Image 1: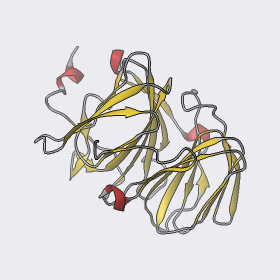
Image 2: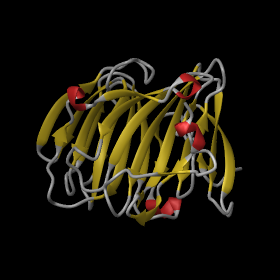
Image 3: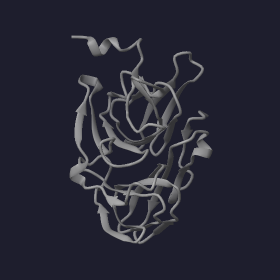
Image 4: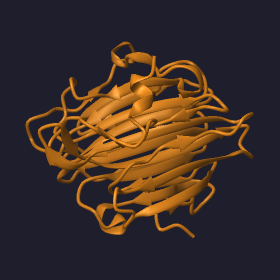
Length: 265
């Protein structure tokens, strides 16, 4: 089994829990909750910032001493609507109570005390279409670099069946003028859920070169290297990306062997 693939460990409650220690890296943490109606999750405040993303369902959220009320409302990650989301600052405890059956991501990274907890308005999550033809995908920016945070970058993408994403292959593992060093996780969902998709993670020297067959609910960790994704015909693919590193900017480097297609035509 791939060392980069993390499978759900339970059917409900905390189903995935990736920490910097378990991943063998420095910045990104990722926890996935599947809560039934009225189920509660609590977490104490610490030295990490958190982006809470209600992928589907509705939940009541409080951070520190502030009650944010009910956020969310999508029936599925494949619904063309923004998720419910909030930024939770360093030191603030989190209290979540599911109003309906809910799928909730807790995206974490090192934080600072320069920020305050807040709801992220759905209108602030810009939507864009990237690529063309069989490289078309639909992107929603949940916590991009032009919104306040110390380390975290969070984005979701829907790739139609038969299309490619994170393509042409790119990487962001080296700190230099044209590239930033960012760890990344991909949380994958498929529609219909019995489907599968493929993600390759590889470096120029092939010291890392793994092709992962992902199923519904899997996470792929990207510590370094290029990381394209392919969705087979008949199965739409959703993924939630969490990125963090020493500099909060998304600057990537395309694989020179495949960059030609960006110049074609």
